[in-house]
Structure formats: structure tokens, C-alpha cells
Image 1 (spheres, one colour):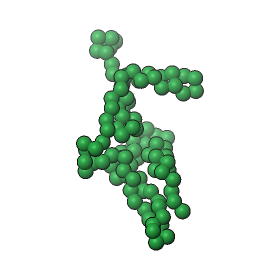
Image 2 (image 1 turned 90 degrees about the vertical axis):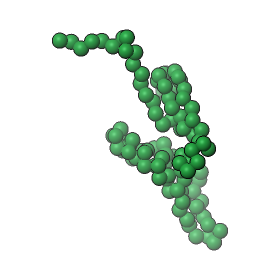
Image 3 (image 1 turned 180 degrees about the vertical axis):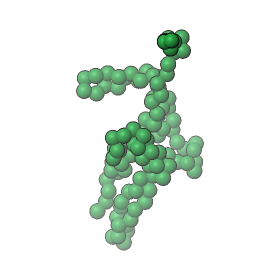
Length: 108
């Protein structure tokens, strides 16, 4: 019995809660602590070790990328977030930028 490598990826990309705040806490915990991966040891026993998406011990070994105006297509609909922040190939933040010059002043 050996867990497939994509199982760890699935655990990092699928959340048990549909609530954004709870899902954010879950993702944070998975990024900081890793997700448990099952594997078969040489002595035929089953072991569990964390799989970490971020190397906090050697930060320089991580790969970061910030992309501007990335087009994402899903179900025939295109979305273009202002910025997407990737860490080790996974999107970890999608901040929405506002143009201060185009902000509508509050109504009195």
C-alpha cells in the first residue's frame, strides 16, 4: 500500500470547508505543518510523514513567482485577476488591486 504522490497535492488543493475563512485556516495549517502522507516502509509496515509544500528551514530553496493579469479559463468563462502570487508552483494569494483615482467617493 503506497499513497500516490498526487494524493498529497489533492490534500493541499481541496478543502473540507466551503467557508472561505475556515478553508484559509486549513490551507495555512497545511502549508505550515505539511500534510500527512502514507507510505510503505522497507519492513512492510505503513509509515506516515508530513509532505511540505514550503521549505521553512531553507527559504532560498523555495520558488516564488508573482504574475500580473493572468487569464484563467473555466467553464467557458475567462477571469483575469490583477495579481496571482505563486509559491513552489501553487497559487497562494490573489490580491485584488484598486485604482485610487477611480474610487467613487462615499455618498452623503
